[in-house]
Length: 77
Image (cartoon, rainbow, N blue to C red; front, side):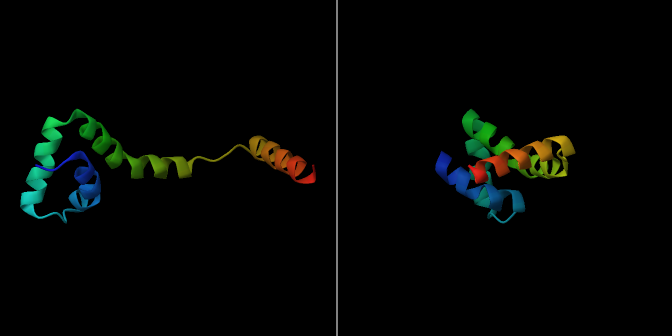
């Protein structure tokens, strides 16, 4: 059985299919018994998608100009 810290360390290898079969089984067994790790792993798997969506969002020009004005004010203070 692997512990929570090991599960976190193995996430990328598990998702990429790089873990040996016995480690994959231990990974899945830990998930079947640890709700906190299930929550972490589900979030881990969604992170790339959420990041892509966030990068696609554009800032309205009025907000962008407000931020620029505010930053100039700070710089000139």
